[in-house]
Structure formats: structure tokens, C-alpha cells
Length: 210
Image 1: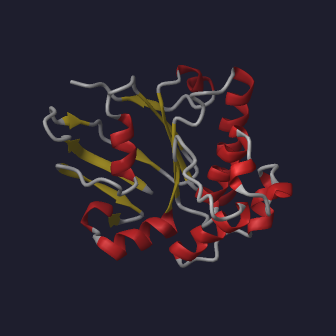
Image 2: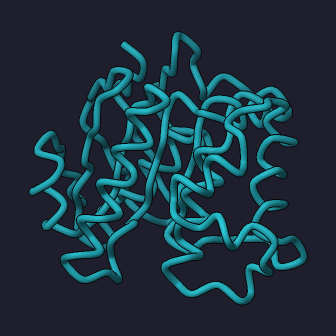
């Protein structure tokens, strides 16, 4: 089993502890994590990505307990093995599209996928030398997805990738994520409040605030 989440809980300062359901995801599988705003679903994504440490429980990715890694070891492990598509792209304005992807290779200390091939797969090859400030919202999202995929990670985490999209573009983005995950044999986890995504990923769990 590639990813295991066991007995996870987390408490933001001054708030009640959130307990999350246990689940497993294997390579090549897709999982949807559904929850309303404030339910803790993004907190769960951050726990899975090693961006937060749980109050209890553990996250095991490919046999490694992520929550036991610290500092540079955690950063390097995340860079090599986890690709995160944030709700907002968080692209570096000082770098062009190609350079934003190559930065992922640098931090992950991993050659990963060829940048030109990846941009071509995502339909934005002509934007390789463009400033990220000139991109449309959809193009910026695709660059964000490309950056998450740059190191051919074992786990892809996507936070609300369809929240601002119509039905047609929702389907396109989900298919894009699934196709790319399948291509590199990665597990795909999408965190969202968007019930439409269940049409495309029937395997889901729900997170509810207690």
C-alpha cells in the first residue's frame, strides 16, 4: 500500500481537535476527500503533504512515516515524492513558466519529467518562456499542475482544483489529473467541496467538523 493515514487528529489553536477517518491509497488509485468549508479537509491535505504535523496518528508514504521527518529531510522527501496542486497557483512572478517547473527539479534534487514534454502534455508548450503574470487563470492552473508533476511524484495532492470551473472545464481538469497520475503511476488525492467530482472519482471519504 503506497499511502496509509492512521488515527490522524489535529487541533488549530483555540479550536476543537479534528479527527480524520483512516484510509489507504495505492499507486495508480484516485481518492476524493469531500467536506464543506471549515470541515478540515485542507488541514488533512496539509497533513498528508507533511506541511502540518498531526496531534496524533501517522501518515505513511511508501513505508516512510512522514510525520517523523524534520527540516531538510522532510523538505527533500516531499520534493521527491509528493506533488501538491494548491488552490491558488503560488507561481514565482520573477521566473517564467519553464523556470517555475525547473525550480521543482532543483528543490527535489531529482531530474523528474522533461519540462518541454510535460508542458506539451498539458497544452501550454507555447507558454514555456512566458511570464507567469501574463497567464490566464486556466493557464496558471495548468502550470501549477505541471509543477506538481515535474518530479514524477508518487503522490499527487490537489486542493479544490475545480472550485471556480464550469462543468465542462471541471471534467477536463479531473481527466487531466487522472491521466497524468496514471502516466507516472502516482496515487491521486483530490480535496474538495465540489460534489460534481464524484461523477469522475467514485472512491471518496467525507470529512466533517465535529
